[in-house]
Image 1 (cartoon, rainbow, N blue to C red):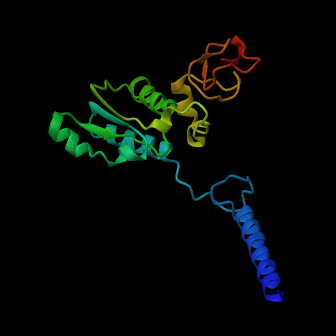
Image 2: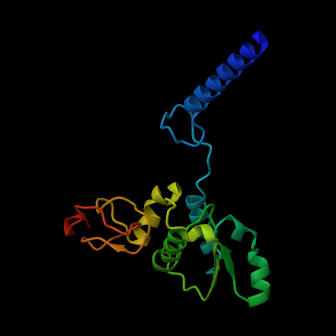
Length: 183
């Protein structure tokens, strides 16, 4: 019995030490300690940089959107099949909001006329209870492309909301206080 008590006490101490270490290091930036750099890649910002560099070498006519599963689609293979230049803009954990924001950023902000659009749509991308991916919520350029204006409410869960200030948010109900002055 003494062995079991010592074992359980050691296990609890190690678990608490592990949790304290995770909280201190905060590798994904979830606790806001800021003592160490976040090791999580911001795929949305990285793909935006890659797209701008790719755009400098020529205009793509095809675009691949979706989650990490769509990352497996080879732009060269699609180019061989369609005869059009492709860019794979799939990002990790993409939701429908991500696809819409990226598409609008490519077409409206970068001026690309997309002729072929391939969307790798996961069931999870349409789940109404999921929160938006934090990478999208932190990306000001994609939020602007989506039509979200800071100060017009919080990021909610669906892009169907049209606040009183005329900006899209991610919610079925706009947060109170959005006005034309928020634009």
